[in-house]
Amino acid sequence: MDHFQHRSGRLHAEDVDVAAIAKQVGTPTFIYSAATLTAHYQRFREAFAPIDPLICFAVKSNANLSVLRLLGDLGSGMDVVSGGELHRALEAGIPAARCVYAGVGKTAPEIEAALRAGIGSINVESEQELETIATVARHLDRVAPVSIRINPNVDPHTHRHTTTGTRETKFGIDAERVPDVFASVRDDPAVAVTGLHVHLGSPIYETGPFVAGLTRMLELAERVEHDGGTIDRLDIGGGFAADYETGRAPDAATYAKAICPLLADRVRRGTKVILEPGRAIAANAGILLLEVVVRKTSGRKTFLVCDGGMNALLRPSHYDAFHFAWPTTVPPSLVPTIRTERPELDGLEVVDLVGPICETGDFLARDRSFPPCDRGDLIAIFATGAYGMTMASRYNAMPLPAEVMVDGSDFRVVRRRETVEDLLTHER
Ligand code: LLP
Image (cartoon, rainbow, N blue to C red):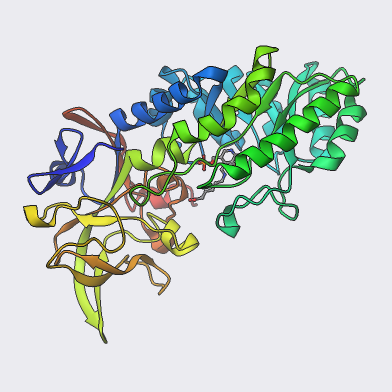
């Protein structure tokens, strides 16, 4: 579900005609829908209400301050993976106590900043990192709240680049070693290791891997408590899928139905559950608006060259990810009813949507059934509110896109478009 729909053949973001945004702000521009962000957050809240989790939005999926502030105002915490992301979360007014901090390569200065801010939990990914945390905490005369991120060796059946919970990835600590890690710090007053964390990968289109990872985590919690430790937090990570293609992703209720029963007993006994969804909240809450700069043919191929490509949206070229794309203005007969690679509509042609970057790997969609389009037309790339702007680059000296937040019939620029002068600001 989202609030990006064609009305009388013209794409609207909530009640705003996106052509009006293009006219005022230009392209490429990411457009976010406040109502969609809110609805997706609330849906997680409601679905998981039986276990009353703290929802920590994954900042890596969309780090715009206005997005973070909107979710923070709804009660969301934040999942951060760097000092930079924590800084953004704090700047957006999120209490540090509602932030959890994962990441395999946290530096001592980053750990120090997190402890000084009063971070809710540092999710530790190695024995050496735990030593660093203890050293920094001792130096600050603080007690570091720590959860151990376990590597449960569960395959989430997703892209290999975003698989994190299998044995030979760099994430977490092998589940078998976790009891020893707890034992090693039991008498260290600088660290309070009282939580477990798991994140298997993303997106995960089935509930099975969540159940498997969680089961492993619950076994470990029992084991640690049996050995005399305490577990008061279980962080089950993110990885919930988004609607890239209509109907493929399970909804929040489906995930909750599989997950909540496993946790109910512990929650009754006082354990706090944490979820870290990013994509499921933000992806469908954003589109990327582009203009066609050139239409050309090469051999049998037709290319629509847009004013943004892998620099604005890396996911197609990096993961071969599918993003539905459609012109913003179409005749009523070509209004799409579902988002899929081959919509069954008359009058489509097959095109490649590509960007301006000097690489053949710079594409947004290949061999896509698409309404006839030409130079000057506007195109929307859907489900780009997550891992769009956060992964955008300035490759080929392309300034970063603008970001706009729509709320009902209003919109505002929440990050201005970069200029070519901006690109020089850090150089001497
Ligand atoms: N928690 C942890 C520890 C994570 O590493 C991630 C994502 C999340 C939560 C949020 O996952 P989500 O709910 O958004 O699926 N750039 C890739 C995705 C990489 C995800 C990395 N970690 C993409 O564009 O698909």
